[in-house]
Image (cartoon, rainbow, N blue to C red; front, side, top):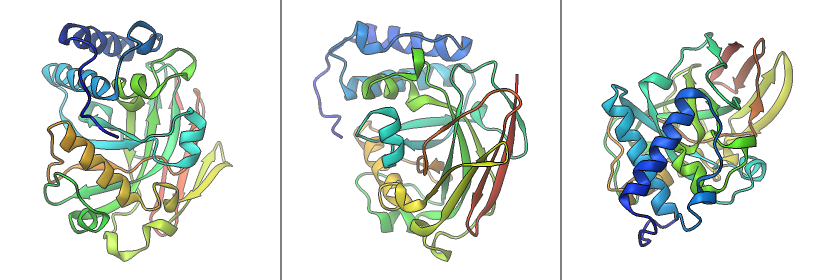
Length: 268
């Protein structure tokens, strides 16, 4: 993925798109794909929209505490009809504790994914390797992500979803905190249960062959955006399985081999 592309839309249009996405997120109101109005929108432009959205939320008091890789597994790419991973930011307002009740009335198309999260102990920047990511990781732990595309019918293209902060909505850290060299993250099995029934299964290798590869990809994208991954960041490597749609009254449990489990329930 290259961000070395000429601007196809001006700064005023970027601001308008960021405001459109923010309004859709804030009021849980679906919008049409941004590329329907801006057909020349590039990936570089989409990240400009995402950055403008991030700045808007920071001005309103939200604090960026981490990042996420998205569309990093083959099942997820197939489900969403795209072929390139992306990144999004995480704020303190998106975090929810394990065993909590998460409302869905403030979302449009809530779906849940099981992921492996990394917590860093030093800054990462530029083009880095899997080994450098692991060396900079304090610990890994399970996480659930609740995604919510703001586009009508959960239908989008890569440029639109990146502008929409890669469908970020809520995230739930949990399970056991484990040193990254204490287990092979490629073989960590995950079972995602929906109302007590197995809905999805997978393993860490679904995420670009190794979850740390997704973090390396993310650091590279941040570099292209003129950003670094700070020490102390919480970073999700992307969905191990396809996402499961949820509604009020549903319960989701993700069980990670040797890493514990996370349960959340959903309310109106």
